Image 1 (cartoon, rainbow, N blue to C red):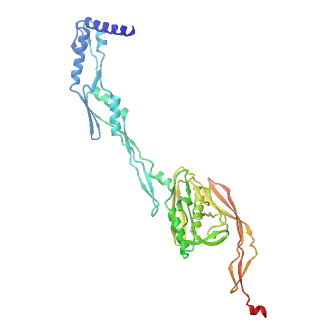
Image 2 (image 1 turned 90 degrees about the vertical axis):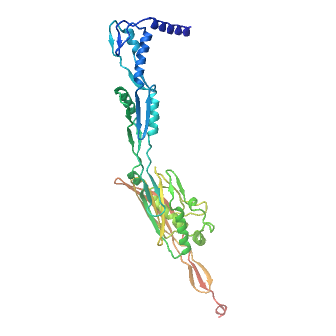
Image 3 (image 1 turned 180 degrees about the horizontal axis):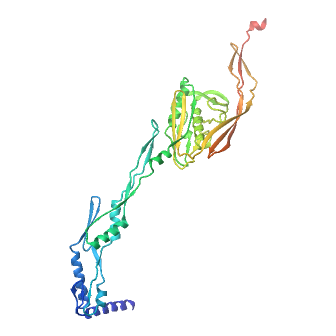
Length: 413
């Protein structure tokens, strides 16, 4: 019933428009439509408006690309029928025609999307040799002003001009060079010294440092010393040198690697990073103060360092002139970190071990053990905080003494 009513109403409107007439003497936009049926008058006015459009064009230029539009892409809005219905005898009307681009929103969106240029992000390249960083500065992008383009199109159609230039807003590249440098500043540097004449040990130190050099710890990520350096075996290029095992110095593959892990451990603490796993040696080592060593061994004793920053931490290692050094780079948290080793007293040596031999001599000198603590000192904004990191007890070593074996003749006499 509703559909039938709509159809009937529409038919009635057309019949009325066709049979009803415009008042005599009425002109619209200079055209005499008096006495015409509403339908005929309306059609004539539309035809005249469209005739004027057929010669019009609109060019939209974005750089070297031009988009051209003509009728019926350029269309119009009018109110002819409303004027015709209200016109009285002898009246003259000017009915402005509002020109527009058909499907303007879609057209503008397509043109802008094709013209937009995304900015090229700045980046930093971390180098294992030479200057630690190479900074690659980004490039600005641009975004077409879509709303401005719509306004310019409307103005051009209203004023009868046929050319519109797309305008752009700059999208600045990021991050800036200053921000890149801020995120790659030196956080800490720590070095230890070794005897470079001990070739096998020096080789192991250089090899382990080389494997760590160039490492990047992502935000929240963990650097595992054992995973990066790998097994200390001949197959992996390591040589035999002195290691601490069972409270004694013995020969073993990878001797010297613990000095590398210890150096990295100190650098990490001085950089304010979180050390999630470390292990002290059974005996005190000579290349760092007590309670500042970090032993690694096999798959079970590892050094793990977590990056607690929001940006990457970069690891540079260098071995030169009997010194192994680590430099850590990243974003500073504004805190100055220091390490303080506190001696808590000696652990006495056990009784000497006496062996018989060909002559009197000391095979292994006695060495006291040591109790110690390590504190992390943090200074920021004129305030200082001191936190206990660890307590350790290093074993003493007994003197091993060889005495000359008594001869049988001496024993008889």
